[in-house]
Length: 167
Image (cartoon, rainbow, N blue to C red; front, side, top):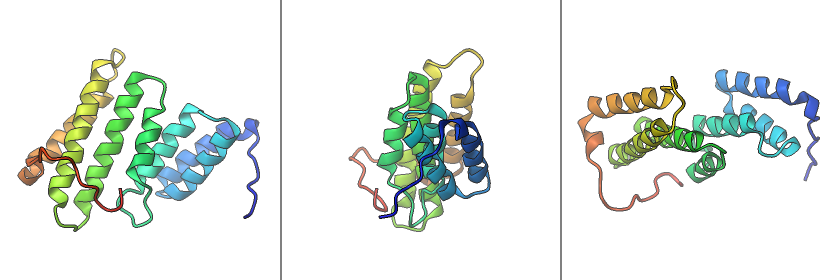
């Protein structure tokens, strides 16, 4: 196995900016790698955890996409109740949207389940948000519009969810 070269702590701010740039260039693998280097140098660095989580969700729906559980763990590791709820909502929403792009049987029902879960997280985030922060409300509205546009997404089972696509 090839040993990785450690990142110096003075390079972390530039590395964070680079990771965000790679995400915006639709290269989540590169962003993920940079975030892992940052977290090896400074474990728990909030910006790196959030960017890593977002890079992972960028890959949902791809055959090499990471397991949803790993992104959920990252969201649960965040310090504030608002961020835990908000980013858990992001994970669920992006998983649901990734399912909508697929062609697997039962995708609408599974996608709807994930989007409903996202809305629950966004409501929890909204309850503890800082004054003037309507990010969770904006995400909740986006989910509501998605559900309203496709009535089949609103059919939610009461049975436990069965993992879809290697979750």
